Image (cartoon, rainbow, N blue to C red; front, top):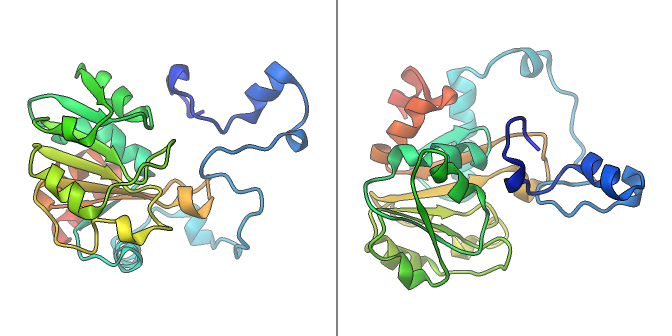
Length: 232
């Protein structure tokens, strides 16, 4: 659990608490939290620069180009410290009107908006998102695996102010992604590095969308400050 995280929104990854409550050692447990991999990828030793230096603009440019290549897109892109960082910034770009989340799903969306005093409606049918100021869809969904085709998502986008599509679990299903198509002005797509690759200690994610939406997010995100964002 991250420091300061609301314990009511805990979503796994803390074996020490489980062992304190139920006993056993770490070897006795199987942790099924997303983003955790007990058979890690072989990794070369980290360079001194990687451990000691902040990333410069050239490194961020290489990272952004690699992500766009991996996702097969030319959408503008903002790298962040995990998809969670993007979720916490979403109230910055939420217009007036209802905030609706297609549920049941990841509970951090509701928490991010409730933290700034915005009421959140959880709906169980995609059609019920229509008319929202901001709508959220996780595709494929966690925890039930619900999937919506890109055409359906674009149709929903036409009925809401801003549509957020969380594609954190879409890496094995590129046919579900909006990113190969044109970038709508009112859509943000979130991608997570750690959830697919099982590298929980590497906090890396991306938010993609129009510069009109990414600009305010970059202004609140440490990695997006300064002249780098102006060059994207």
